[in-house]
Image (tube, rainbow, N blue to C red; front, side):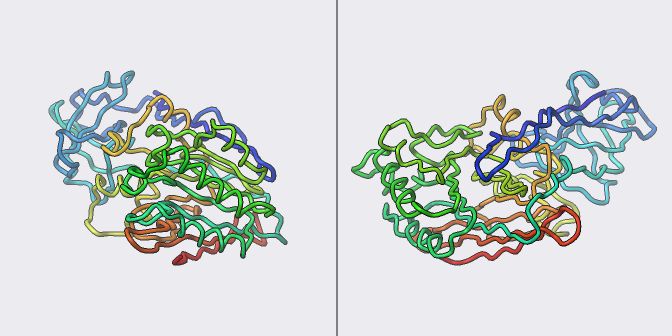
Length: 388
């Protein structure tokens, strides 16, 4: 039996001095003939593979876990799972797992062991010259405080950008936040507000060698709230003229390669969504942020949660094509309403830079410096989370 998930890199992008990631058609996990049919009686331990789901409408808990098998091997059978004998687990709805278990009477799986999940794929070798480094600034919206439509916080960040002149600056939406009543109820229409914001970014970054990347968000009022989210609109000719050679608009999520360093980027708050649904045992064991981030790397998806958060409209056909990971990135930018953090997870540096504004006050952004190690093709990353 084959478990297959399409793993085309999300909206591959080739920008100078960017280079596109080598394409990989798909990721295949060969399970073999030893996979048990879920609904068949099996008193001896066997290998079961399937997708974790909840047996009701409430939140997942250890007593409501069910496993949904594949159509080919199990006819889509759904059976409850007894986790009482499993010493350690971390599960969420939509997670694909493999477990050793029995099925004494054909109606319930009794799990003994959950097999450790494997990474989506090895990192691409970093081609960054050893005598150079990659400097990066990352900031996530909202770029206005919740009681104002003023772009002063964005202006403060752009002042830092002009002073430091990093190799790359990543600005993640929302740029015009749908949760800000001052933006939604403004006398100016959304297109006018977007033109004003983009004009500010273009003006302040003109003449710089810094590559500036703007990542769309489902919370932006001037774009369709569908995930995966295409790049922000520039249909207006006046707005299109603002796209200077160093200013790029990209999708959510996206994967970029800069001087051989791979960045996975998503403006959608998957960490917060996963944190609301994930269960783990023993309770409060290990580092929660590292564990949540590791689910993306092991499931090979920027959004592995199913069903998704009620705040998100998902196009599943596009999700399979444009929100998967075929390789472990060197850096993973995952802004969230959770507290900002930096973690090293399976050789990948995961950064939540926080949000540039929080409520009525200032927030944080991240300053990163990436350098290739003296030996090998891995990289070392230094990260500072700075208050604006």
